[in-house]
Length: 298
Image 1 (tube, rainbow, N blue to C red):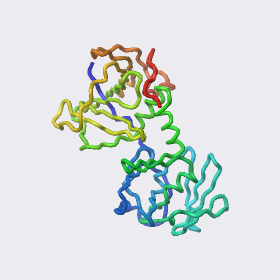
Image 2: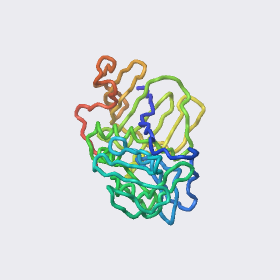
Image 3: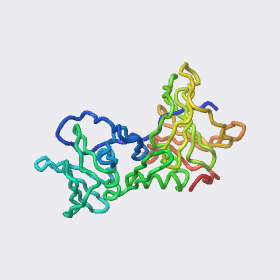
Image 4: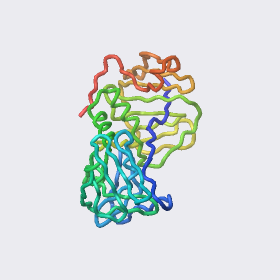
C-alpha cells in the first residue's frame, strides 16, 4: 500500500502579555547549558538571572485555564488562573508577586527585556499550575502547563485514540537536518505499531518521517527520507513495525480511511469516514481499531 503523510502537530498560538517597547525577540541566554521545553516546544529565548532559569511569560500559554492582561496605567501584568481562582500581579524589576493581595517572594526579579516579560520557571508552575521536571542526563527542563500535563497523562496512559491524538499534536523536534517534501498531493498516512501510540511513521508528498516520543513527552524525529526527490535521507532508518494500523487522511476529498496492516505489509481497510457529510466527523483523524489493545501505556 502506498503511504502518504501530512504534518499533524497542532500549532500552538502564543498569545501573551503585551508590554510597552519593541517586539524584537530577546537574545537567548549564553550562561546556561540547560534546554527548556514548554509543552514540547523548545524555548530558544531563555534568560539566566542570578542562577535562575527565566522563561517568557507568553510561552506558558494555556487559554483554557490561564488569561493574561496588561494594566498600562500601573505597568502591571495581571494573570488570572481560571481554575484555581488565583490572580497574580507582576511588575518589572520586582522580586515579589502579588497573589490575591498577598506578597510572595520570587527567586529572581521579573525582567522585561525588549518588550518580553520573563519570570522564574519555578514560579510559573507553582503559582499557575502545571509541572516542571529536570532531566539531569540530558540537562533538559521539562515544563508543562495544566492542559499540557493533562495531555501528557493521556499520552502516557490514556486509551489509544486519545494517546495517538496527543502524540500527533506534539511539535516535532528535528535532531538532524530538516528535509522538505518534494512531491505533490494532499493525502497523508499515519502508521502506528499495533497497540502503540508513542512511535509512528508519517509520509507526505513522498517524504517519509519516523517519530518517537521519549519519556519526557518530547516528539523526536529520528529519521527522514525523500522517497521521490533529491533531498536525501537523514537519521537512522528504524526497523519495520510488522503488524500495524493506519489512518489515511485525504484532505481534498475530506475522507478518512483506516484499517490494519499485517506482517507482510498487506493492508485491510476497516472503514471510511466521509467527514463532509457529518459535522461531528469534521475533525476526525484517529479512530478505534477493532480488536486493538494498547501495549505501551505507562
